[in-house]
Image (tube, rainbow over all chains, first blue to last red; front, top):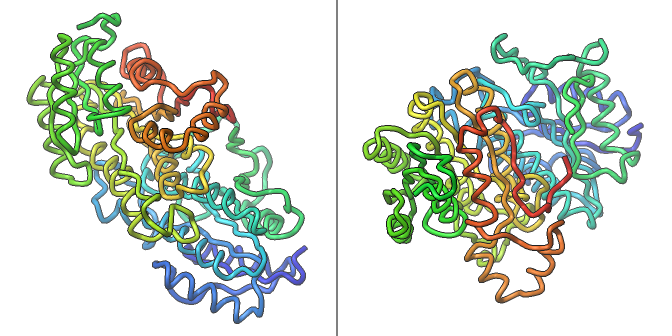
Length: 222
Length: 261
């Protein structure tokens, strides 16, 4: 599906980033996991530019939203200001910087995919800051999609269950769902790479500003 | 002052950014519905809203409050509890003064600098965090309401105000999550996405009348509403007992501009 594609993966969540990178490589893409910080605009632009140089071209950038130091289930009222910034605001800033880096590096178009938790769609007790970030990132993606579409740059989100970040919410904070997944099977891996790969490829040439839920039909957001 | 049916009689409601525009409209409507309104504003214009409410027979207390200052938010919440012994609702409406026109890098994603991002996020997001944490014990006691003001930009994105759109979207994520987290406390948390005539919009439209017509053309009803008459009644409803079963929602109070759910 991705033969000839050159994809940079921003692995703020290392495990999930590696899973995306391996999956895209299995689909035929040349993949580079960004080396260096993306915590500032300048660093992100430099990191994406270096990846492009390494790959010799750049057709897509995939960013996995994440919280530095990992997730914690905690009531908002017990969330200190540093944690609020780290879990709510910093992930939006980092997504912004990586998107800016991608836009600066593309020659005549490309695809950006941002991986977020389905908490953006459902909300989630105990994870208020990261859910706040996720929905903010989704709107940032739409803004970029509207602005960059005529430059040939498409921007989309893929939404995954929060467990894909290696974090299992306690039972009382799991988002209730009457139906659960609509079919069995391991989420992530091939199905994640397939969805991201489709968004990276020309198969999705008419798709931008969207959110693709890769959760085996659990949320089915309107 | 319960001419509108007294839906909020005996309630105390704190509104941020209530010195003008939508916040003022929500404050006037809540007071008419019987609430004691704690009008907070960055500048002195909130004092005029307080006087306006009192002149009409309502109850209001003005408190100067910069929502980017945690201590100021805590003091405003404490003042609300001091004057009436309770806090039943908090509406976080304060908005950063638009800067995208005066900054040559504009509000577009590609060039959006940290300063512009922070300018929006400090008021919208950090302010919401301060408000929520400070108000929680009082809202819990009152089985109260938290309303976070979002925007159509927080639903559909916008190419020219990327930070604003991201922040307004983030507030919707916060709304859904807090609704789940605070549900056991019987606190409802909702968001309103208004499309409304405000002083800053009016000034913009005076300079660009074609944009007003374009904006009206986005709506099903064909006009962009007045803060007090058209949009604030939805806030009054959410703050009232009648809305006790509704939480985690975004109310698009926008003349039928956004219908894409």
